[in-house]
Length: 168
Image (tube, rainbow, N blue to C red; front, side, top):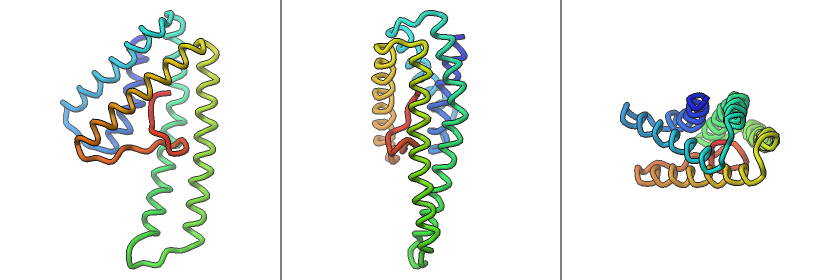
């Protein structure tokens, strides 16, 4: 089960990063190591039982597809807005309005998805374990942002009301 949790966490972190930057096998190995350490540290510090680890892995899998779909839709909407804002080309006000409205709707859906994830975690994690997960997620996101800054890449935006993307 530990490999399932690590695998899902890896997908949750690596897929968005690999879409943003193309790296070689060394970079992939580094990502795997970071995610594995994240999951290992969290499950150990949170004191998860074997049953909780299983449930955690299942929750990651359940919510991953929804996160992926929301992230894809966000990228499409932002791409549409950027296309409308090309220099020297008049933007279509109706199209821009629809795209911005779509972005706001997507943010609401993302917030609802975040609430749903937290409700799922609440079924098997204590409030303290959930709080620790939030802390671990924030730390991981800061580390990712620091690496991106050092590499001259813009930080990745979340599909949840502009917050940075992290694990659940």
